[in-house]
Length: 317
Image (cartoon, rainbow, N blue to C red; front, side, top):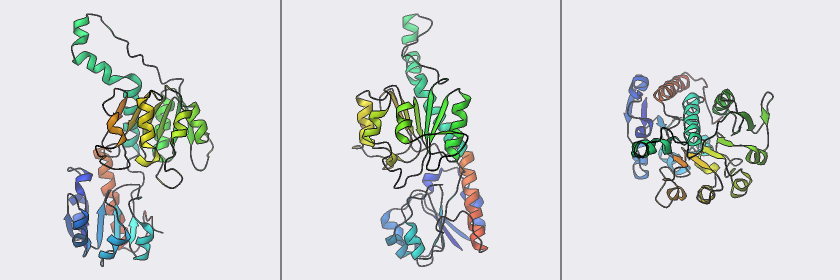
């Protein structure tokens, strides 16, 4: 069996790809694959492993031997599933591998913004703390999360993990999810935007969530709200968010995901990325070492199960 990993650079150099996949046959690993290289590289591949590369009808028309696509992720919006079905190609994802990693990263971002950690750190490292001779500094003012309302959009594994942490800090948790569940306060998106002091997003990108945080919904939010996106870039109106930050209509913003990755110099966030109340990170939340090892282990399981004629983590059926 010929397996090709098409964009290993996005998986981290220390991810033990060979340890898990070399036993299935010939393994070829490419740091990245451009559109121009795609036809040659997948023409004879039986299995491809990828993270962010887009698989379209055109791409699949090159892949005469392809039987299985393994996505190094939970989300698979970069794969044209209908085209895969037409070409008889199976598609597997890896559910739930990054839950703890993303929850930890989300919490880190929220706490850094809520406590103004970078401003306080700079006050010390710039020498101002020493020069002023005052034993403490309490500007900018920060507030406790206890007693605040933390709104979560998307309440799958990651949303639930974030909710548990939020509750442990003393926050009231409200949730927007497609199907309300017992045991958690479920509200519509507009109510969540109006009532939340902190909003974190953990939903998949689909027709129902694209642009869910719109210009109109930003206007519903409290001026002191902290907004953090750990879902997909396009669940926000990115230009409207940048405008709201610049105009001081939301207090703080963090994002680890973008509609175009990496974003270009003309992206709306370039106008706000150096502000003290903004934390932009390079789509890293999913990628703790432990999470990446879990992910490649499940991909090996997906391949083994497929070879045995069984079904595991198939998203095309």
